[in-house]
Length: 437
Image (tube, rainbow, N blue to C red):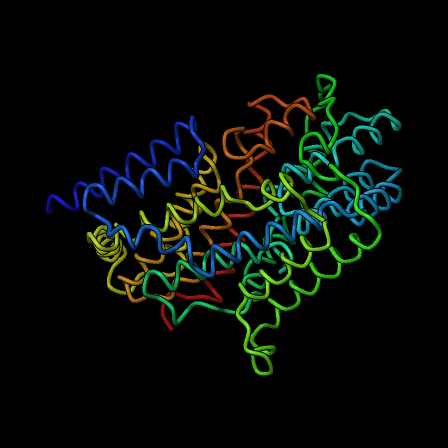
């Protein structure tokens, strides 16, 4: 093993340690890691900054702006209020109703903690009115917000843009630019099973807990949603443009036959439109650009490129090939690429797990000459399944306080949904996306 490879692996290990420590913003940790790769000679400066000017980075920022404008509209509150009204009655109806609205809202809001923060006051009010413990409702809604998000095109365009960027960067462009419904098709079975479990079975396993006056702050204070009311025109523009951009991305291949326009150009045009109409202004605009996610993408892409250049990815790929055999079993490989990110995401940021393991997965599959889509999809799903500890996503500590759960409660009640998402995802995805053939 040459010295350059050793240096590259040491820097990569330091970045992982930084993610685990969780003392600094993960985007900062990733950017510092990329800079260290440049300083140590593992990465060319031009390669380090190239992702910043890529279509993926522009598309990400534009999508966050569009989501921020849409989240300020009354559509969000209207959906929540209507489902809450229908859900009044039995425990089963309350849980099922809020599980449904959580899934719908999360696809448009794009943030588990924002969605949960919007809903918990409604849940608390319903439970108080019915003399019901909120602990019977908060966990099912919480795991839906965390684990079932980004299933439809409305919620997954940013994530799939990042994955396409990685596929093009790491030499597997033949698999890039897949239809966004491909991800929905891969994700849907586990989502449907999880929704069914959360709505109809989960509450029976939950303890009776009395939360500590669950979270007195309101939704807007926590999320920034509805910080400034929109005019009727701004509302309509935000909703229509958001819907048109999502539809445009869904049917981009058909649109390109008439008008040659890239996905990032479509998103940028939509973002400029909502800003021009004043849906987002000043600091509000900057706060909704998702720059932390953009720089996280830039930093981890640089780190992944350095690992590829130094031969680290080839080393890991060869190791996996020898471990699994010449033609490894798709289900075994899929399980490995699910279980490792799944375990790590319980103790470190789910975004960090996804951004670190997606490039590694692609490079390993490239080394093995295998189809990367199945393992990549499993890495993303595993990273989103972060509901066993409060360290992976801000939604978990909010959910714990709102429902009065202890850490012991959380581990116990998370076993079944963890098994569901693992077994269903691995069996389904590696069946429709085998490594070879």
